[in-house]
Length: 270
Image 1 (cartoon, rainbow, N blue to C red):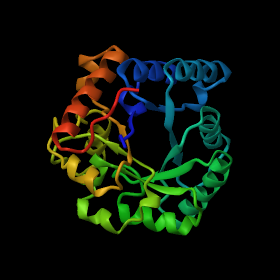
Image 2 (cartoon, helix red, strand yellow):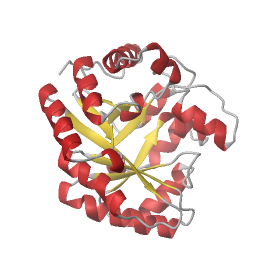
Image 3 (tube, one colour):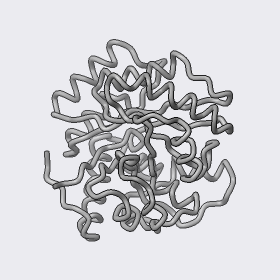
Image 4 (cartoon, helix red, strand yellow):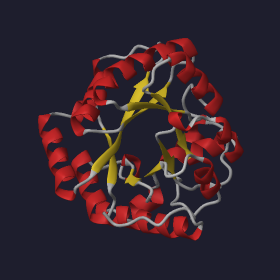
């Protein structure tokens, strides 16, 4: 079975969801993800995005990002992102948290899972160094406290590395908790402070094979045929490929070449 390769919204952060869908389609992706900004999401944006999805025969892997704030209160703005995922037929919702209290974060995550339940969407908690959930262990503890079948874990290869994890750490995790993963490459080291972690995440990512991370080893340690969301949020790519379709083609081509060289999978064009 071929592995799903999806275009993550972060690869094209400056473009609207409909443009991201068009770029995914022309680049040959079968799946796509969207960032939903509540202040820019309306009936017209929904219609344009659904039209682009249909035009290219795409499936929606995920929508993002539901950011649980300090205090842990989720509100109508967070629900709007969930509702957008329901309207678009997304399989997953991406969640991060600024709330340091694990119990409060779990309560909020449970509420998000309840809102997502009508669409059978998974609610995937991501850990990263610029949030309150900075390790896989913390994320797994919160998911256990959430006690909801929709709650899931999201591994992003660069954040996995920054948190100091090793591919062998994935062996003990139930495959049921891992509906998809985000992949990219990057620099081996990052200065350990907020500003540099932020720059690392939003400007310095690289296509798999162009950096120094053990991307192939992480993928091979994850469940077989896990969906791969290609998030190359990179200033270098934005500067070199201002056209969204050209950027999407470039990162997809580089990624497929890398995955084939590592014997991971050879995707068929949709």
